[in-house]
Image (cartoon, rainbow, N blue to C red; front, side):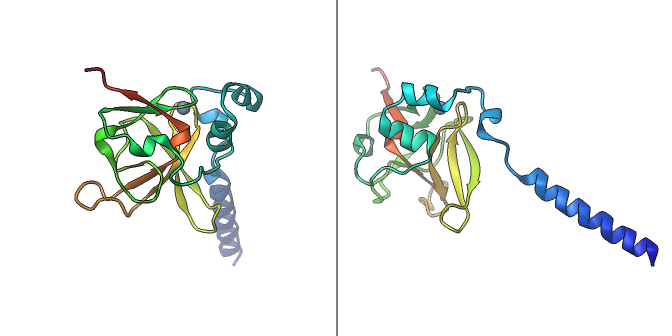
Amino acid sequence: MKIITYLFLISFFTLVSCQGNAQKKPKSEQFEIQKTDAEWKNQLTAQQYYVLIKEGTEKPFSSELNKIKNPGTFICAACKHPLFKTKRKFESGTGWPSFDKPIDGGVFYSADNKLGYKRNEVLCAKCGGHLGHVFNDGPPETTGKRYCLNGVAMNFIPTKK
Ligand SMILES: [Zn+2]
């Protein structure tokens, strides 16, 4: 009986410690660019700070980037890291700039339970700025993914002709 109790305790503590390890690290340790809250506040506009740093969401249909159809690259508004290309953009009807695929190495994923169910948060892979979320209801003829992004978190660089 003693051995069984021992095994039970071992497995119990393994479980507990796994849960401890599964917790995500603070954002600042994961990303190449590290700035203090005050530095970001100083650098960004109030709306950029609210979305990128405070993980806010802009009003739908508010971003100029919704209209963009010409070739180019969408970059992080905080650190200029390239995130998405126009050719992967599609009209989702949601009022937020939507893409079916990021540039390789462009974004980082993190689980977000803020609304009571799990959503995959999309962050800039270089600075950790909050960009939006990714859902599985994108165009079935391509990737099936819908990257739902805040336009204020990005800038657009048109391809030079
Ligand atoms: Zn960034």
